Length: 210
Length: 210
DNA sequence: AATATAAACGGACAATTGTCCGTTAGTCAA
DNA sequence: TTGACTAACGGACAATTGTCCGTTTATATT
Image (cartoon, protein in one colour):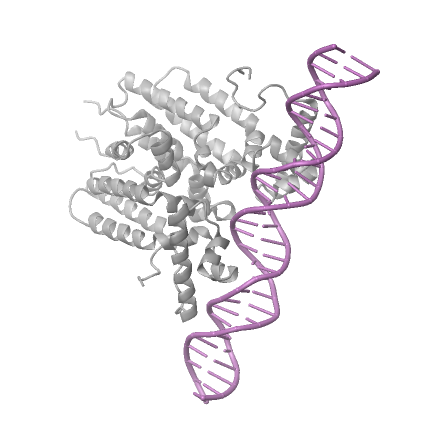
């Protein structure tokens, strides 16, 4: 197999045959339409196949499961989010300040894509539980946060004994979609409150100035 | 038969009829046996019913879903954990120190009950996503952490502007079973490392001494 | 254009979860 | 003890996910 460039999404190994591409498009269109109409949770995969006019085999060949389909639907949003994040995060200024900005941006991403993110999460059950974390999207976010924390260490803004890797997971998981929905809808917390609390956690990472 | 009702499963309204109690016992025994034999994930609900010698209606009347059954199975462990936690947490000493102890204990609980906790988590999909957080077990932990944080505020160990509620969710979610399994098995992190990182987060909550 | 071949297609099928409803049997009061 | 009331029972049934496999078709080659 020819080595493909390290693309953001690992779909399309060689080149898609024309009928395959057509099927992919039909399925994604149908899914968008049905999700829009009745909500993500209320639409079954078979229904999507029927609406798209493709068989189950085709449907599942293109998208391993509903979560993968939702990920594909999220595609552009993810690209935008990652692009903006990488740009802002690569800019000048204090690393911890940029980290705080990033946490706010991630909350906004949650806010805008809650339904699809929830479906992605739902599909990560049983044997696929690990996929929640081991995927290009999460790993990208993780690298980004680690990078910021390491930079904060180097500039002596953060204590040197802090564990950047672990902390990155902690910060990202504090904004996982399940907890976020629970805090927003069940506890009635405002977005700014959630983000604010997390920023105060980051504030605690700072070296105490003498 | 151990006292039921204070765990994750719903409280028993009046009193269980004798045949109902027998069914409950048979189902739990069968589940324990099969889970032990082949692992939680590899056993279906129907199989448990068959092994227990009860019909599907009975099975689902007693346990709403596989997660509820696993919660019941976790019952005693949960009791022990909660009891020990409440005792230690109610003791003397610095609140933040007790919080740190609690985080270690929670990690140990994860370690000991990973498979069942994973199944409980898996069953909290779709419409039941909220149940991951809105259940007596989680709420108990949450109250306990909030209590500690509030105490730390009162004794001026923690900055007064910290949001105890949000922070409690953050700390607890940092030890959710999915992330924990990912960090332990996928990233190969040691338990002490995970707990240590979280304790350093708590350390950051402290008021900076002048 | 004809042909070979591998990818893609479609829909039947298997597995699992969860519900429904007619039947059975504990429990309590007379 | 008897009888009635109602919780509990059991298994068929519906819905959904995901797989399998025989058939079709796009594409590269001659």
